[in-house]
Length: 377
Ligand SMILES: Cc1ncc(COP(=O)(O)O)c(C=O)c1O
Image (cartoon, rainbow, N blue to C red):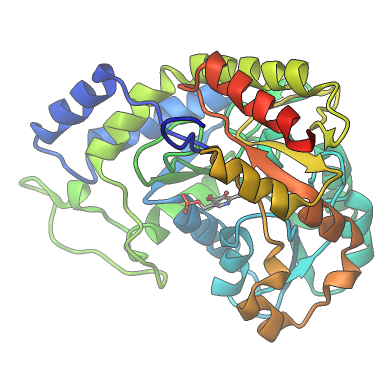
């Protein structure tokens, strides 16, 4: 048995990160200052997009993204049920209705054909998630959005640094959302961002992260600044601190190294588990570069028994995800039936996440694979 639990995901914080945070803690700006802008600029430049708005977490980023579109109440937004609840909660926060489409078994991403079947006169947007770090079938989704004049919102929380047809994710949709939670590709402790090429949506989101107020604290400082400000939208306080953004800037410098290590680990899993008959390995389409946030496999044995066995061996396997419509809140309020999502249900019954994070050693991967092989024996 491993001495300590090998978690499914873990941050990688170095002395350089700590020094960056400490240096900002010693500065005049703890929030709303220059580090926030620097992090936003570096993120936009890494992704090749015009604007970023950094906020306190990915859930807040999803919320202001949907809010910025100013959709009529009761609008429908088509989304995937195979995600963390935050993706569809953002639709509900804004008085809209999440309409779930089924997924593709290989990539676990939203199935464009199922999206087409769900379109009604009330549909205003598609909110898709690049599950586990594998980009969605973006071309098909863009075609649907053009045909039906729908906004595209991309939840890229699993896929920072992933590529689709040679371009980094972040600028394919109208709005793209990132999370910097510790299990993600880079971390700011808690944190998130919305990225867009639209100057109009960008300006609106700057206000939405600050109570809907048109001037932030830094622009109200100074001899001639004046005290007047106006609250133009009903907003919340979704600000992120400068010391979190200092961590973000420092982590962003190492993102490509983290991604490389994630890809190496995924390669090792593929090598060691390729001949294990009860395990179906994850698949990557040819036109994508996977970001390997999660390494998920489908089992041909009882998933829950395998899960318990691995946890007893101190291996922090996990299940991503319980489909959103199965949560009691959703079951009560939307009343959709699991049987209407045959692929999602099949994947949910059989899926398990194996640990994957940059700091993980090759020995850890070998240990996990040998325990997996022992299972049948
Ligand atoms: C797909 C997806 N969207 C949104 C979120 C929410 O991000 P945060 O935890 O930063 O609020 C997560 C977090 O796990 C996620 O996995």
